[in-house]
Image 1 (cartoon, helix red, strand yellow):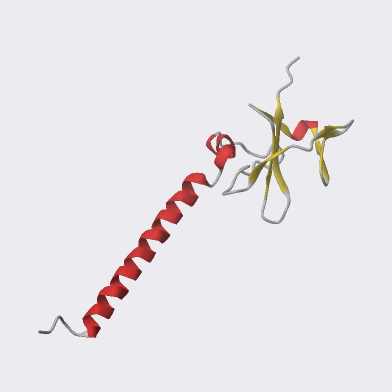
Image 2: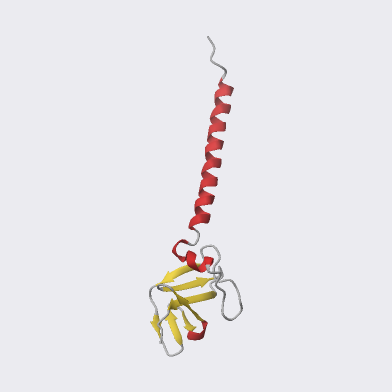
Length: 115
């Protein structure tokens, strides 16, 4: 009794592997798109722009929360740079910086202190 030749089994195995790989890639792409901004999603949804040049603040994965923030006479001080107060936008919670891939700052957000 013959159950089929070995090539049929190999073809079926390859089809299963390729299908699983395609499904995995599609799911990964969808998950990455959904989680791209994570907790900084409010920046992307708010369509915030750089106060000096009008550039969009947030691209995929460009914004992150900053915890080591000091205030100085000329602005907020984060590791490696000082952000002038007049280039700072209000944040609903915490300090956030958005950077271009080349490391240049796009936007900075700080909690609104009120009057």
